[in-house]
Image (tube, rainbow, N blue to C red):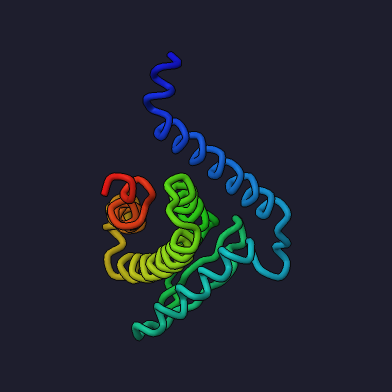
Amino acid sequence: MKDLLVKYKAVVRFILTFLIVYLLLSVAYKFYLDHSDGTKYYPDYFTNLVADQSNYLIQSFGYDAKVVSHANEPSMKILINNKFVARVVEGCNSISVIILFVSFMIAFAGKFKVTFLYILTGSVLLYTVNLFRIAILSIGLFHYPWRREILHIVIFPLIIYGMVFLLWMFWVNRFSKLKSKND
């Protein structure tokens, strides 16, 4: 067993680092959600911000859109031409996806400055892609409500998780310490 741990030391270190960082960031985010004051920003600041920014994007595409608080659940409703098309819940705000991305990046870190800048750039890119994802999903649901399942369950998760995967692969192939050791 000891020989296996020595042989796969880098893999074990990666997995443990990833799990520890992911757990710490997830606990911190859960703490934030549990202590979020929903009176000023409903249901929480980030979800409210994502809903508002998505609404702005929808309007910039020429649609009459607005966002209102959902009366029966902690979410924001997106309306296009006064038709309810989607809701933005906590899981839509991209924070959980960014936590996953950051955890991988720290576990697979390269030089500090480059890693930090890549985490920052990647997080902003994921957040921005998520805003476009919500806006396009809402417009798609406005025009094609019968395509709800494929749009929401297949295509749009594929976009956000596909982006995470591409960012990871780019990082591993260009900047990580492992790449430096093998060159």
